[in-house]
Image (cartoon, rainbow, N blue to C red):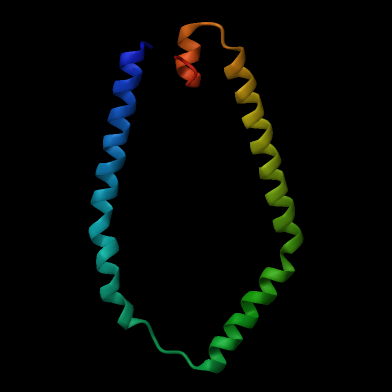
Length: 102
């Protein structure tokens, strides 16, 4: 992969991302129209829902901690491995791929 094709690919991806973002804006803006249609709930029901949510969150703390620590560890190890591979790249193509080309 040459530097020019890498730059062209990057610019094309950026343009696609901007186009998708702009395409999503009208539905986001029109969401305000539906807000008044939300049902009114009493304070007692709101308190009951909040208590239920708090109880469920508290009961799952251990599982969430394991999941979070597992993914954080996996991501840290993966990032470290990618950094080592990038710094060990000895040819120009690999340096462009890892974003280290000057």
